[in-house]
Amino acid sequence: MAPASPLSRSALTFYTLIALIAFAANSVLCRLALSNEQALPLIDPSSFTAIRLASGALMLALLMHLSSTKNRTTLNKSSAQPHGSFLAAALLFVYAIGFSYAYVLLDTATGALVLFAAVQMSMMLMSYIQGHRLNRLEILGALIAFAGFGYLVWPSVVVAHGELSITGMVLMAISGCAWGGYTLLGKGTAKPLFASGYNFIRTIPLVLLMLALVWLLSSLMPVDAMQSTSAGLAFNVSSQGVLLAILSGALASGVGYALWYQALSGLSANHAAVLQLLVPVIAAVGGVIFVGEQLSVHLILCASIILFGIALVIVAKQPINFN
Image 1 (cartoon, rainbow, N blue to C red):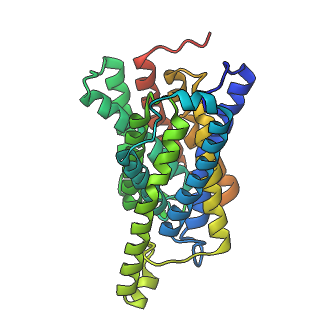
Image 2: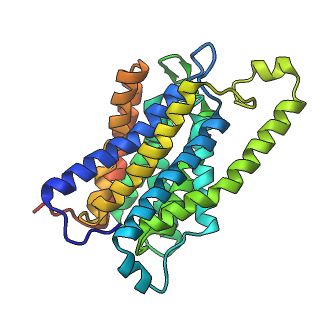
Image 3: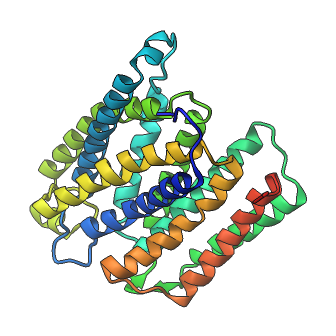
């Protein structure tokens, strides 16, 4: 869905802002649907993931159809259309399922912060493995970010409604690493909308396998144990939960990703990385407004330390020129 002509500054600003809000909206929508502070969550994590990925696939398929119809002549001349890959689809699935199960245990702001930081740190690690050596400023930034993480996961930390879930943070970190790998696999693709669309479609067999596994486990578990667990190993679907999952998949993921790729045509990689620092902030505000959560001083301090460290790493790679 690459634009035929360069984006105007106003269009670039609009696409970028809406895309960042969409990324943060995924955290808010997921938390609204899966919060274990309700008597019964609106939907279980597996069903939320399945509906999110399926609705995202449908939305991206529609966008792909509209794009191919609009640019049929160009597409027909192309000999190598990007169709994604099974590895990318697997990473996308791991990201989505880890994201859902983590938000049973984490509040909106903490989840978004851990996800974003894990994405950046995993990409930095993979870049190092590929041969990029860190300069002093990058090393300093990485140490600061890891120190902020250490402070965040300290076992004695208490947040708004109880002890911070280490399990939830591990799940979200895995989700972030998977998204980081997915991002690197798609880097430089000629038509990222089509690659993403096919990757979403390829997750459907994994979704069906996940649903079958959850059904099998729930059928084998005693009723009392199934009702007492908050791990989501039982199907629980409400109309509100389905609606939230569709909004997350079709709009926040499908349309959000499409707008972000559109914006990337006018942003440098450095600017795009820095702008994503806003996502945890927007998610935290959304959690306060829509989920009724409260931000602790500890979380704000940890977020500031982590994001400052990551910003140093990003800036150290290439000085930003705002002219």
